[in-house]
Image 1: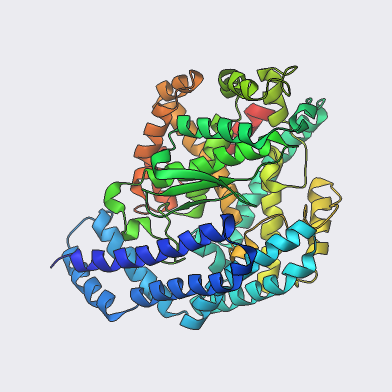
Image 2: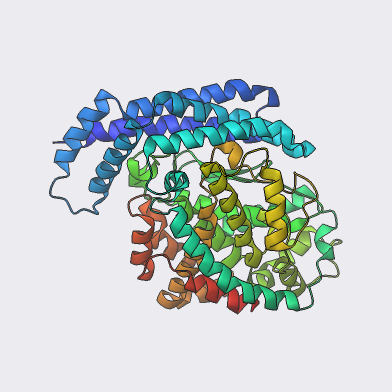
Length: 502
């Protein structure tokens, strides 16, 4: 028996999903606003074609041969895993009506266009009908695939297999209890000066500095590029074409910089998947129908949060790189030194915007969104009541009065993308990042010492061996056990926050 027909079929599915991703990238970066309706249909056609190919007779015959070809191989062998994951995906999609898959895919581009306009004008009413339809389709999807305790479990499982509303509640409770005293201590100190972050920074200088750091981290521009968008994201069309985006604000310098660092972490994961996994199951999310090489969204976020927070939000990083930033903005940063800049970008102060939140309050933003998503999926909260619930939860958790929808319920792209259930993966990524960095310090002190010299190659080498190269071969906790000796554990994350802010 041979695996070649199986590999050819999966390669075709991956090609279709990469083409859909390319159209999605274009819709968020270059497409004129008028193209949204037809672009949504184009993407839906490709997603439907990928799903139909996955469930087709040729795939069934190829899988039958492949199943026999991997008999006797170890359960965690790459080929055995690829076959097992594909069989699971076929069973999953057989439960979901094709019309529902197509409807969800078609809605994304139209909803994103409506969200973009609503965000620009801070007019929630423009987006609400699209969000209402998104939630309705998410409920239908959950009902089709099935769940044990809560509809939300089915949606979370698309992005983070194994997690449920109950498991997330337990994780969030532990984090709330651990973060609260650290945040109280941090807020009790005099706030660091931050006025210089809003001095009118030209986009060209922001881009040049951010991209130079991305390359030092290891981002290969021969296989990537940086573009501008409303909400930063990374997207890959195999490891040979991995693109990142950011947004620029002259009145808030850290926004674009840490956006670039964050998306670079995602890109490093995709660019460093084992080349043998290209166009295979192990570089394709066959359940969610995305061309993604990372084993889960949480694992992917662990890489973005690791490079953003454990590398770029450190005193030594700015001691090494602040002179370069200052060279781009000599007048704006004339009265600022590296220590002052580091203090400003690690200032613990509740704010409205999640992507600009400090490490201590960031997870409170995630918990807010998960609470609201869970209520929407259960039918306990309506889309029309969502802005009021958002504002009330922000007041309760962060003691902030939301001034407008743009800085409140309309700030994230995820719901317009149909990503109901994805928000928990950011906090899981924070927990994983700290766990992995603790393992790096124990396993390879030289990598940490090299970071002090602005040499990030040894850290990248460790992550490539422990995480990146495996693609989707190992599940999240399996990957963590191999790299750190234990499954997901919030203790290293709380130790990291206490050491940095306590």
